[in-house]
Image 1 (cartoon, helix red, strand yellow):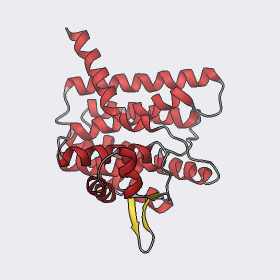
Image 2 (cartoon, helix red, strand yellow; image 1 turned 120 degrees about the vertical axis):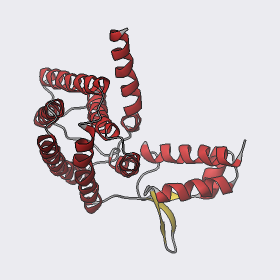
Image 3 (tube, rainbow, N blue to C red; image 1 turned 90 degrees about the vertical axis):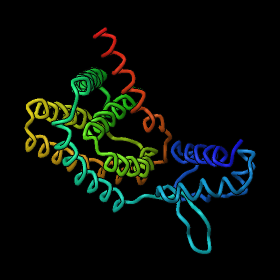
Image 4 (cartoon, one colour; image 1 turned 45 degrees about the vertical axis):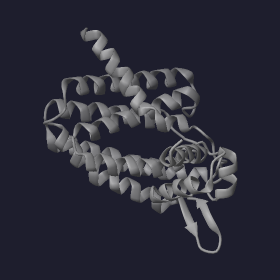
Amino acid sequence: MTKTSLRDQAYKYLREKILTGSLQTGSMVSELSLSKEIGIGRTPVREAIRQLQLEGLVEQVPRYGTIVCKPNRHDLIELYQIREGLEPYAVGLAIDKISLEEVNILDKLCDKMQDIACEFEKSGDKYLEGDLLKLFVSVDMTFHTLLIRAAGNERIEKIVDEMRMFNRLFITQRHFHDLTVITDAHSFHQRILDAIKQKDVDLAKDLLTKHIRIGLQQALDNYDRNQSQPPIGISEEAEVVDDMLRELSGNELGEDG
């Protein structure tokens, strides 16, 4: 196996441990222990740790070593500020570039979110949990990701991908999504999509900005409530965007064919 392959192996292994919560925030990251666990030398492990440090998942603490980053309220605010700066601009670019198939996929995502809201309401539960929670998060992430990709700006997409990687540290926390959160998200997604179909750039940007600002307040409330909660591992949510896009694209192609 090549040096690059070994580094990639170590990178994927360590990243998965972080995102699943098996290596919790604040935990020590040991080159020696990881190299023994994976069964490879320390050099590729060191390179993998360096890559994760660049992505903001781990940090070097003087006279202590490398630890898994523990994001705080300020980090969360900055992440949403970046989203507010980039996503409305991207949707403005996307309006003239978005394809019919991408619009159809966005339609399907809005329908899925509405179905989630209906099923959740019928359940009588106070908060969204389990598979329905995972589906909601994946639908939400896929909607926003597709808007970014439709803009056709690879640099914006790269920045958002890197930001999302750091944001995944918050995924190991418990979510407190009630029916209001779900229905509000669906309403914003539907209205944003309607504005895109009408090619109303100003309205699409304004709606997305408001959606992100409300999302920030919900995320802060969620963060504050989680300070007394143990971390949970639901990293599947972090890897579902491409799977869902393939699924919906396949459905779309199947209908056309």
